[in-house]
Amino acid sequence: MKNSFKEDVEKALAFHGHLCSGQCIGVKMARLGLELLGPEVEENRRRLYVYVECDRCPADAIMAVTGAHVGKRTFKFKDFGKIAATFVDAETGTAFRILRKNRRHPAEGEDMISFYENLPDEEIFQVQRVSVDLRPCDMKGPLVEAQICQRCGEEVTDSRHVVKDGTVLCKACAGEGYYKIL
Ligand SMILES: [Zn+2]
Ligand SMILES: [Zn+2]
Image (cartoon, rainbow, N blue to C red):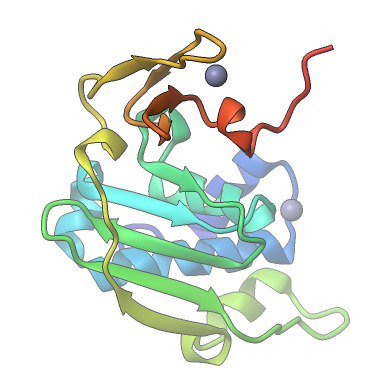
């Protein structure tokens, strides 16, 4: 790895705003993910896509360490409520899902950063070889398609529309909405 654990924690801290165990776990996960995918991906982050299954502290650390961003489409947030992330090499399709299987905390007064740095990965993480269906409409590059929702008239890009009984709908109109218009 190019950066030391401490350097990556500092990077995460600058982005997240405070040091917490979630930052250390996220940094550890990101480093393990990059290590598993190998040096070619570490040096060419354009190949890297990351799926993160929680919107808590570790998500920020994973973003900061990997450089994956929502706006670049390389960071996919899945609201599963799990401390887990999948690291994908878009060029080869190789993918590893890393799950935090055990909670481990430093003892009272122990240095948090060195505790997590020295904690063996296999003590807190479970690693799975997985395959991820990364479609052209999920990747960076030009817009794949744009459809108009036949109920609200709003435009839906990148194949995020739904077809119900032959009608093109946006996800909100299809019942997946998170807001109500007042
Ligand atoms: Zn935090
Ligand atoms: Zn709609």
